[in-house]
Length: 548
Image (cartoon, rainbow, N blue to C red; front, top):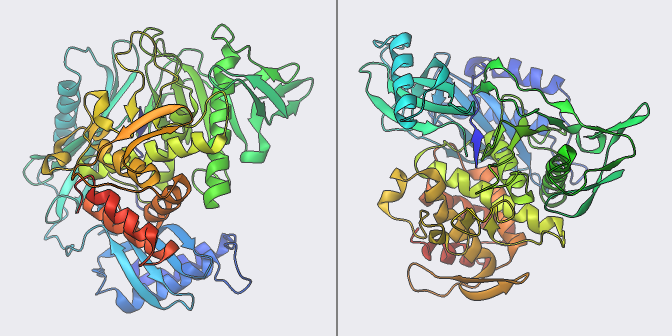
């Protein structure tokens, strides 16, 4: 499972001209955060943070050459404010330049979380390596990653950035290379190249391989909110931001990383009697039922539990495309279209990838991109994947569907007899999948992000359920610890609240597992107190996976 990584372009908000940007944000009439009548609104939080940036620019590492733009705003019930910023340097996006300003209810400064504390100052922003050269290098990296494949329609698009994620800040080319493989499926890789020397700094996969009723493949008969259109109904839900599901007609596209050469269709499903699907794969609308249901349950989880309306938190719905490609063993979230895409699987190893936990996993990538934007490589990439596994699992539990009860297995519904295991991933003991790791080590940063995610998954299971043997909803687990300790769990609800607050308030693009420990401890302290059982459990669970 994987997600499409967005192509991020920073809009300008000059440090010297913050007031103008604040006025623009105020004009958008952001809705107030629920709470006491005198609690600050989101717009007031932005205004307060702008004043802090004026007063503390130097101490926050900001200079006249740097601009900032607000990415996200959170106002706690007690009025505490957290304003998240992206940064540019001489109009170039800064990878790792993001930071969060924390304010008291009265707007006074309480601290900041920064992806990097390095001073950002370059002698020149003129590259010595040309854009075409960077494009060629990225294309070569994509070919090397797909050895044996004949790639079609290969396109590379370089963007000049400042890299503050890998040591001292430096000028770099971030190049998104995309193509189609021999089966017509999208492949993509992002390569970071030193703009002075041409040396490869980093590279990562950019496709992260994720009222009527309907008979679904995996969840039985489920309720659906639909839209009447003449004498028929559309699979479109006005109660959840206009979310809809369409048929990709087994076509593929090359429309990823904000490069769109062609777009596979997403013709909205319609039905005459508002009873959708047959529960079998022979009816094309059956997979659509699962996809729409998965979107509904993910929306409901984030709104019911965390007060977040929609992926971006703005009340706007996403959309789904089902029946993408032929025998496509994948699903992915794409920020550029704000949509989910599902393959039908090859029928031998995997069936249609429209299960509830896969839907929750993939759409959580969208939530992450709108909040911490964890870089999809190294330890932060593993943490990104773990975040999606954790919330995909919590969505499944929250749905409470007896036909698909919650468990700590990922993708168990989509695997077929030709697949070597009973699930794609296991959270109680991640190494059961044959590739993931249970415990942190210095080598974690060099692992594929789908394998280093095991560290975060293992922590999450231990925090929720504890170590040792346990049965949940009829599934047996036996979670070990890496240090021989015994961990007592605090439950799934508290796991979700702690991880969500850490993700949205404290984590930044460069957060690694040590940083995740600090972020979740801060979150537990905020929610339950520094001397609480919950705070102690977070520390114990991280220590149990060797993150100390």
